Length: 267
Image (cartoon, rainbow, N blue to C red; front, side, top):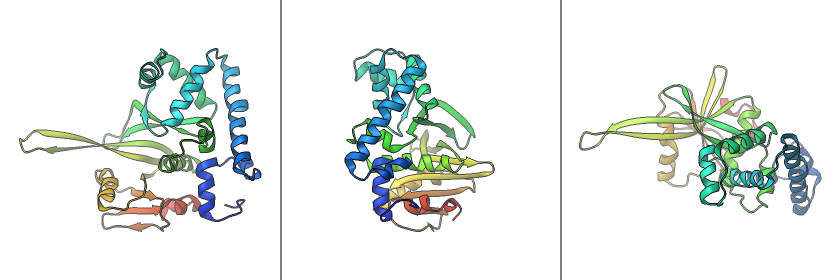
């Protein structure tokens, strides 16, 4: 916003579409912005990865990036990706190769991964991860600006912002147990979008985009209510609202307030 000429709403719309690379502000029209990002991906990111790691099957790498971009923020691993190639793309590629390719993409700062964390057990669960793009504009360019789902992009932006502020951002997992009418124990697993931690600080965050019904509010709060510790629990929404805390201590905050105030988590 210190360099953008326009309102916060306009800036958000452009950030969701074209990301935050500084040079994007020198491109005035949508066509110029899209051409810049597409060219940057092809000539810098992709060619650098291929040349550095001597990749011969460029199509497989390109297809992997497409899959990760289309499913940004979805739980996956190399085995699931291998099954996707086999079942959907009709290509056989080993999970070991896909894991190696994903590591290359991370090393090139194209993507980053969030690992699952057992909140009550206080341990990491390495079976599945979520991949996010370091810049959402590059992600959108890879997909030809065709799959710009604002709710998924918002989650990616929150992840990037937490990491920019020095936090480790993990995917929280909380289990609860209850008895059914037959007396049988039922285990239920809840997911928290992000467990942000840095030193002694910790925050639990949900990316809700919108909470326009009581059912939606209940849904977004369910996972946070399963956490029994005293660290702050926050729900981020698209609406323009300053932080407000309910009777259960859960804070609801607008995404722009969160992004524009570097101390917003402490509000």
